[in-house]
Amino acid sequence: MKLLDAMRDLPSVCEHLHLPLQAGDDEVLARMGRGYTYAHYRSLIDAARERIPDIAISTDVMVGFPGETDQQFRHTLRAFQQIRFDQAFMFKYNDRPGTRAAQMPDKVTGKVKQQRLEELVALQNEIARDINRRQVGRMLEVLVTGPDPRSSGKVRGRTRTNKLVIFPGQPELIGQLVVVQAQKAYLWGFLGKIRST
Image 1 (cartoon, rainbow, N blue to C red):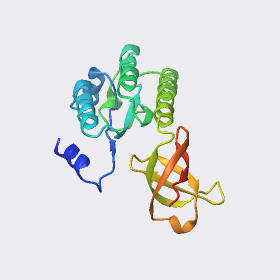
Image 2 (cartoon, rainbow, N blue to C red):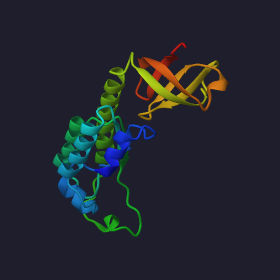
Image 3 (tube, rainbow, N blue to C red):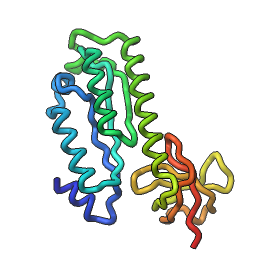
Image 4 (tube, one colour):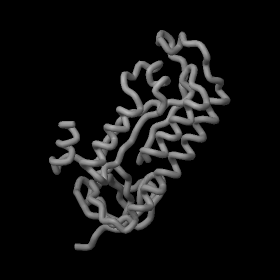
């Protein structure tokens, strides 16, 4: 918990934590050799949010690991509903030569893996949009990273929670910290307006 305390106490540390879940079912986690249970993972998330209420949490998840049943996949969906990740990198399992998993029986079919992935992505997209919508109107500290390649006269940057923000601004803002009001939310982040000085 020292790392979480440091994230809370040090102003230079941003409020974003990437913590791979991989699966929301204990049996699947054990077959993956992950060494933790869902309850343990959830306790880490709860500890992070207790210390840093506005922390953004992202994760990695794999669907269709050998032997994954529909019920076990449902446990992963339940985990997403309970935790409400800001962002998730979601993948279908594929055999990699030389790995232990490649030799495991009970492979999940490609069709089922695709269906599970699509269901999980749809759920996560809904959650992420809802989280971002709740931020509309807030003032966000943004590190300006460059011009927006799709919009003339606009720049883009990242918030302290690693959300993308696009707003009107000139190239001389690149590299600076500015305060931007989130005006419109999307799955990927926000459109905003820089606070006038």
